[in-house]
Length: 318
Image 1 (tube, helix red, strand yellow):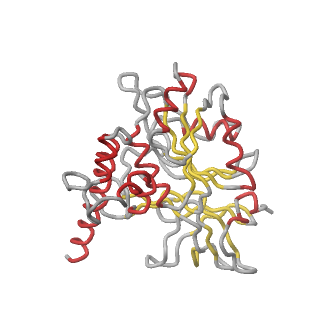
Image 2 (cartoon, one colour):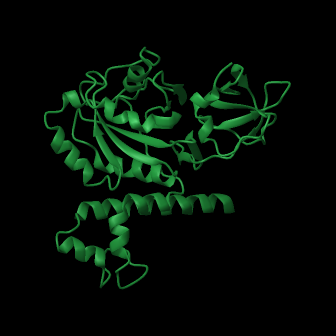
C-alpha cells in the first residue's frame, strides 16, 4: 500500500470518504499516470467533454475500472498562455504550496523574465521563491542577489548550487509537512540537476548548455511529479522559452505592487503613467524613488495582458 500523505494528501481541499483517489504524476497523449493507495495507475477520461486534469491534480477513479471520473477541487493552479499563436491556457502544475523560479547565475539575471514569472506565480495563488542556481559559476553572488531583489518584492531569494550543495539547506523548509513545490524556468537553468540532487539518483537527463550563448537545451519534455526521499513533493516542468501570461491582471499588480500603490495617488483614475498631468508614478521616477525601466516593463506587461484579452474576446465573438 502507498501512503498518499507522502504525496501531499493532507493538503488536498476535499477528498470524498471512501473514494478511490490518486494524484496525477504525469500526462501522456491519451491518458494520465497517477499514484493511488494501491500503486501506480494509468487511466483515461470517460469522454472528451470531461474536465482534463493536470500534473499535481487529485482525481477520483471509478471503483471497478481505471477511468478518471472527477477532478477534485484545486487549491490553486499555475497557468500560462500556451506557447506559439494558440490563444488558450496551459496548466503547468496544480495544488502547489510554493513555486521556485529558477534563474541561472552563469550570466547576469534576467530581471524582465523574473518579473513575468512572479506575476504568473502570484496570479496562480502560490508562494513565489526566486532560486538563483549555479552559484558556483558566479564571481559576485551578493551583487546578483541585490539585482534580483530590485524586482522580487516580498519573494524570498536564495543562491544555490546543485553541484556543490551550496545553499541547498535553505530550500528544505519549503518541503516541510509534505508540501508541494513546482519548478519554473527556462531550459538550462538547472531544474533537472536540482531534482536529481534531491532524489539521490539521476531520474532526469541533463544536457550541457550551448557554449556560444549559454542557452539550455530541452531535456525535460513533460511535467512530472516526484516524491523526495527527504519528504515533500516536487513538480518538474519543461523549460519555458515564453512566459505568456493568461488572465493575470492580479498577478501583474502583485508583482509590481509598489507601482500600483503609487498609482493610487495619480490625479486620474485611468492614468496610463505616460504623459498625463498629476501622475504619481512619473513623479516618483523624477524624484529617483522608482526606476524608469521598471515602470516601462510594468506598462509592457500590462499592455500584453490587455492585448491577449482583446484577442480572446474577438475569437469568441467570431
